[in-house]
Amino acid sequence: MNFRHLSPNVRGALFALGAFSVFSSHDVLVKLLGGTYSPIQVVFFSVLFSFPILTLLLVRSKTESHMRPKHPWWSLARAIAAIITGFCAFTAFSLLPLAQTYALLFATPLLITVLSIPMLGEKVGTHRWIAVIVGLIGVIVVLRPGSAPFSAGHLAGLLAACGSATASIIVRKIGQEERSSVLILFPLLGNVMVMGALLPSVYKPMPIEHLGALAAIAVLSITATSFIIFAYRTGEAAVVAPMQYSQIIWASLFGWLFFSEVPDIATVVGAGIVIASGMYIVVREGGARSDDNQPVLSTKTRYETGTYPRVSSLMEDE
Image 1 (cartoon, rainbow, N blue to C red):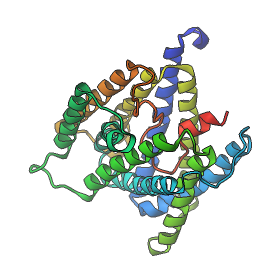
Image 2 (cartoon, one colour):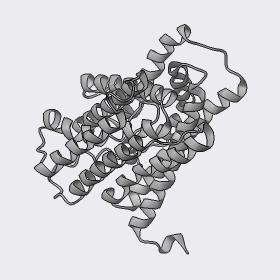
Image 3 (tube, helix red, strand yellow):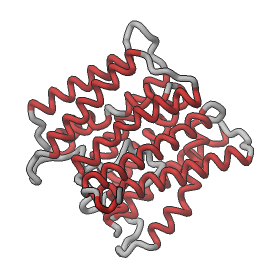
Image 4 (cartoon, rainbow, N blue to C red):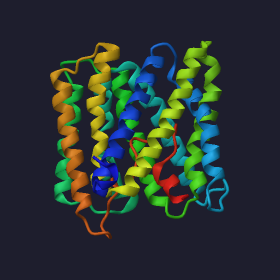
């Protein structure tokens, strides 16, 4: 079958599926390194290795820009949220099974919907409220309060989802006015500065193969981001966005292959509930008029960690 003969939405979906499979490979390396090194060290070097590639992307940008933000306090707040998200997400991957970590991070679209009310002044209808409540019930199923201990990994996963939702909503608020260079580089610079300051307290010498794995994390993140850009340029957002949930399949496969992890019933059921509610919100936003709120579809990326660039920022540059 000729790829060009496929419909734009099918091609967009395939690009997105490829992107999230690459992101899942990225997360496997994060988890592998997290068994030996602090998330601080993993975040610091993965961001550091991203800078040469991102510099090339910014150099080829056709837009005139500089690093002075138009909204300094919102940009600072987003950078802080992204730094917290990156550290917490990498911590969760280190401590929890892959599938369970994804199930918690999949709560991000639900939280984006909730935060759009106080931060953007948008209205959320009854249907989306029900989807949010159902999705949060799914998170509770994954956490299994009373039957399993609530660990640091669970807390990290929840904080990562909250931080990512906050960072995404801030971009939704200032993204039309703020410079792309600020949106791309501020979280990355923040991660380098904060994690670099903390690095001496946790640093362990790394063999060349582990440094290579960190460089691979940077390459995989940029590659996946490029695929998502192609996906959103080709297909409709309402078709592309749900493809992120394919990561649960990769998580189950990679978890079994590399870490001997088999998702338990609570994780499978809870993840299914969270995914179903998230997809329902995407469908509702996809059917909304262009002047209605679409905070989840406007995110155009998976959970935001500040360790790789935002998709929408790079799309604006070209």
